[in-house]
Image (cartoon, rainbow, N blue to C red; front, side):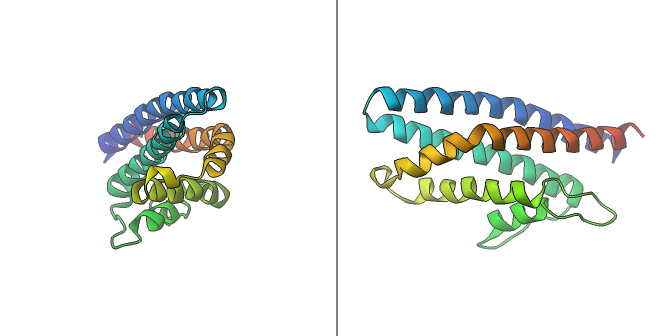
Length: 159
């Protein structure tokens, strides 16, 4: 399992790097929406916020498969996976994220669901603005939590 932990840590670190690019895109595109009243900037920002949470969920899936060895199923698996990451699994791993971060991320998860299931003309610009404004702090917390977890896995992988 040692090599597997190192591989998982590597995947988490790469995903974190990719998320930085998405965050920069969100910031740049949303900044353009303030200058130019064009719905395409709202749509593009929404798509990138969707991508941001999708990247986080990919990291959670990697942990669920490779460490927890159990992935939620059913119609609510997305929220169940998020909850799974916020709890300790005794004898397996500590909680990956704090409940407060889980609650912040749940807003992005919910928004991703909206992006997938409504017409773009129904997107709420005020909600997008709120998520964009909260993104830097949320991203710092995600980066810290996932980096700490990758450090833990690397320690276990080298033991």
